[in-house]
Length: 291
Length: 261
Image (cartoon, rainbow over all chains, first blue to last red; front, side, top):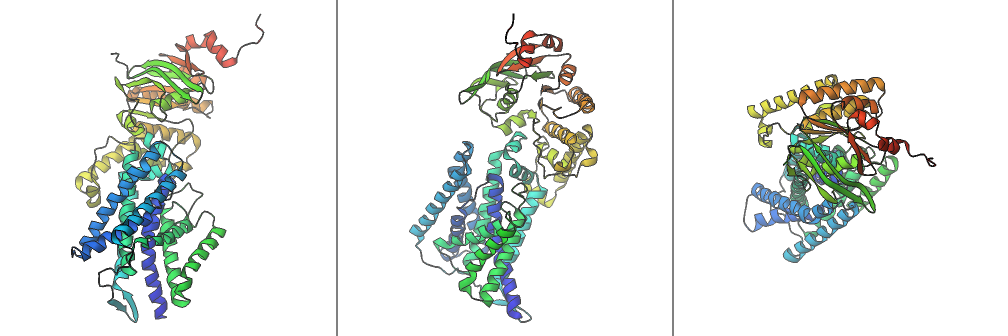
């Protein structure tokens, strides 16, 4: 029974980290109808920045995380300016945006590999000391990752549903052309979305790096977030969170009770089964109710 | 320089090989209510799209309050004071009636996200004023009882009214109404005429109205002009009476008899 609770807690924690990425995918998809494959690279970039801030400059963890967030926002917004905005202004089909995103992804990941090398690095924070609640042990970093992820999601929700710029983002997700005719600045919305998603991917990268390792191809895990956001319903933010939590718990249960070798097999199987019964995902309403 | 609030100068747009709008020139004075009519496909909505720069003109110029707005982004044009409604309703269906209006209220003073988060007195006051303004507009179009309803749940006629409230929220000096009476019966048309007249006199906007219901156009434009567009060009300009008796207009609407003796 202890194992079960331990796995559940650990699953929720990793699910919360997935949900940061899944929400990032959903946010970009909801407004621009394309999947930002470059997330993968942003996440690895964020982890590397935090890693070197600590190991080279001996910064405290929180400062390193902050630096990583700021730099990843710069990268994310910069990639929007360079790779997406020119296409968007020419009203290019979304397939082109996706290809552009893949290009950005390949470039950034390979640059990371070239500059820093492909080795696996252990994140230099002490994550070992576990908490005990009864006999259930909980990793300190698991707890921190879960708590901070949920806090960030709550903040994002507040921003989207309680502020004027958030209203502009939501309107753009429904109909970007009409929103701009009503005075919503498309470029400002793009800035907000790519800044927010950059920050999300950086935080996810740092926590994922702590849990496993920091290496240039660590961003491959975003495929899990992709699964989660499809399961939840593409473009739906609550769906992305729910899908991520289910996926995180499912994975840790499979790893704990069956074998971690089959973890990914079950993730994809889960995706297939959900899509068989809910072609639009759990909370996707045929693409029109997005946020 | 003329005192016109909006001047179109030889405005032309080509879609591939089709000249959708051809050398349209017109002047609208501040506070005027003019009609824009013409058979289907004449290019009326395209003219609106050109004014708001949803589509780029091929040649010609658009002056708003004496300044060219041809290269401005649609959102900048909206904030400068041109707002519009749509032929096919384009509300934000999943958002509430209130949110639809709130979105377009740009003239409210701004406050930062930080102020909003800690809820400073200034932020609260501005929020309250914004709400009050939105309620006033919704009251004007008789939608005050539906504030928290989702826009998608409103019946058709009320959705049209909501579009009008949203357009007014942008505090325009020029309002573009694209077929406000589309799909309405005679009673609803009469209510609409009253509403548009009320908006016009109370708010003092200049209004350009595209409309197919002739009684609506003829009634509202009684003291001013109607432009008739046909195949992208201006066919006639004049008072409702002049337009109704203009043989070219009748020909454009009803077609020509093939074997005229």
